[in-house]
Image 1 (cartoon, rainbow, N blue to C red):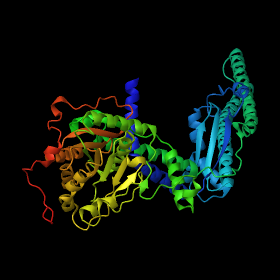
Image 2 (cartoon, rainbow, N blue to C red):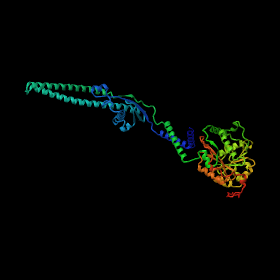
Image 3 (cartoon, helix red, strand yellow):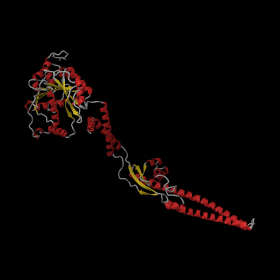
Image 4 (cartoon, one colour):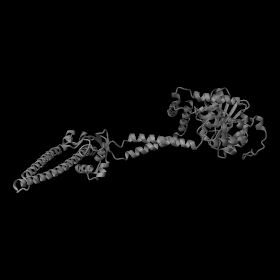
Length: 585
């Protein structure tokens, strides 16, 4: 059961990561369905019900010698499904069109109705038309004409039987006339033979004549009965049980229903495409995958946030307070002192995750052997700025004097979570346009946290600025004022910038976002750090699957092979090539 729940959770996590694709396909499909529905012509539907019975009652069949009411042309000689086809037949449709005055081919008119057998003797006739009056007229017209067609067919069958009986009666009448002539010849003619023979012949002719008279009488009686039955057949064959009424509103299109169905189909299509893309485009998913590729343990895993309206509402309230005149005073909070920002409030789940991360880093020497920690990721979408800010806040709350340096001067951004603007910053310090005290921003009480923002995009190459001798001198000057220095690096794609920042760092923490980071990207970023000679002390896995039960430990053969860098290592002359700034540093 736990395994099934885990697989279900991972599937939902994959779908959530591709939510943009799913939302896009759902919106497109729903919009397309709505557009198609609104372009359709209104269609009205009406229905009638017909109960099918024999044309003549069972007693009439028995008395007339026609057999059973469920056999022969006057009864239910075919199945109810075949009766349904009779309703939609050409003769019935042609007559309905003539009665309603419609210049429509019979096959088109028959295609506008559908007939469904409800029971062995009940048919439902449903019609579709551009207006309600025509729909009701078609449903009732086909019902009436079907019954009339059956009656006409039955009457023709009865007339055929009567014709056959009349032909038989005429033959019998002819035979009676012949017998009368034979009897007259015996009585008046000069008969041959003995009187006894003539008398016997006369008796035989009279017997035969009497039989023919009886047969003629029987045939005439049946003809009279069938003639009366033909009159009764004009009202038999069934009845219209429910007559169609004019519908008040069209049955289609139904924009709401069509939009909902289109949205569901689009959602299913989007989910299928998302799963296919997840299968084809492999991403780092579990702790073990991240640890194996980075060659370092996962020190902390931050699960994906559950859907909540609170962050959105908080952002809206903050936005309103900033644009409202006197908003800061209206909140009832004292404004921060100039040059100092307040520590942001973190939720308990974030505090727990980064406290665990800080504990793991401390066990690796953070705060003692590791004074400068570089935070990197393989792409910009993995949330390194947020991770660096949260780690800096938790570190400051632990009592460590913490400095956060935003080293991403190639794509500089502000730190909204810390309330720190982008300018002035590191780029201006390295370019000699400002000093460290002017760029340094104090955050929180007792100066526990300070931030050096990235600054505006430099006019010269970011690589040249980071390669200048000013960067190590700035870090050395700040070494005595802070216990730890967190350096937020750019994405691993900026390999030269990452390598230069790694050159002034003791160790690196790799930030990996589950479902976003590709194994090749993480491996390339790890290779950049490896070439720079800086060890990776651990991995921070963001948006981790809550059902992931892997350990997050690297295989034995991929453990760290490089020793931790110390201050003496940084002061030792480098034997490899080094980028030199234009100023000759």
